[in-house]
Image 1: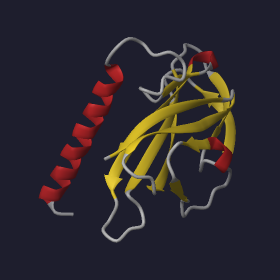
Image 2 (image 1 turned 30 degrees about the vertical axis):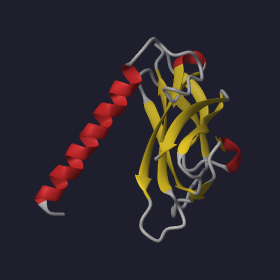
Image 3 (image 1 turned 60 degrees about the vertical axis):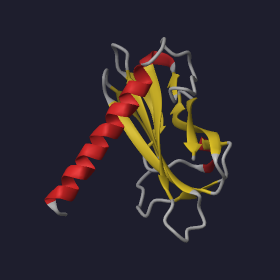
Image 4 (image 1 turned 180 degrees about the horizontal axis):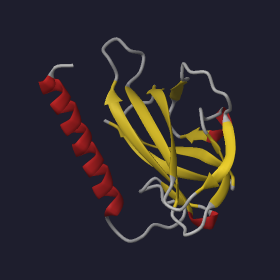
Length: 161
């Protein structure tokens, strides 16, 4: 990759990360399931955050846009939290949306779709899913279940221009 392009990619990533962080820090603390922030609070100090990125679909694509969503489970508590979570991919029952989406399945081999374990204080685990969006312009919601036990879900909104 040319050096100039690498700088642009890094700068764009930094700008996107800064904008996401600024968007999450505005206003008062959220209530559980606050879709505006893409955040849900679970038991034992567990928190799920969803970040979404919408990109233009390539010319000739059947999609109006491409959506990438990353769910991050974080232990914000002071003690380890035991949980069962998705580790490789989200199943159909883990995803709910108001948009018309086609999920792109990862081309990887999973040893397991979910795993049990302890999440130490401050530790996180993340999982990303990608979609082709068939819906027209508008604002839509996406709900993901990353943690199976304890069972809770976060909801985020995204906009198709």
